[in-house]
Length: 156
Ligand SMILES: Cc1cc2nc3c(=O)[nH]c(=O)nc-3n(C[C@H](O)[C@H](O)[C@H](O)COP(=O)(O)O)c2cc1C
Image (tube, rainbow, N blue to C red):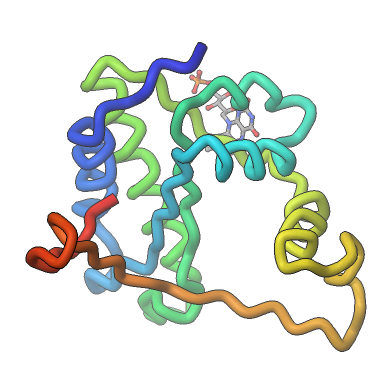
């Protein structure tokens, strides 16, 4: 049985990542938090066989680099260093809070794209078709504190 991680702890881990140093303070990262059971279930399909242990994690944080949002100094991909620093910050904060954190590169992209296609109501191999366009988006979430009450930024 997975032990849930309190939101304050998760916030504290994300905050440690957010405050990581980055080249020209470009903060070229996005953290995608996966914690609901249905999203975790989907993410698990993309976990490589060698990382099957990771399916026991109650939270996964996907660290995505904004490739064109980083610092272009010396034409070097400094965003790679930035996201590494942010990841390490989060790992250190997790351990500091008594949690266990582990970075993994073992993801099966094909499985992920198959699942994403099916979620869009398409055949699993739709992502292979040349005509298929894959879009991504970012969102800021607001919610009513109570029904018809004050609308506040929802932090996840
Ligand atoms: C970018 C990156 C990707 C990694 N991918 C995996 C992985 O897919 N599976 C895994 O078990 N460990 C992964 N690791 C963890 C390393 O294997 C681990 O940090 C290293 O073996 C040292 O062990 P320690 O962190 O317990 O000291 C990854 C580490 C980094 C930095």
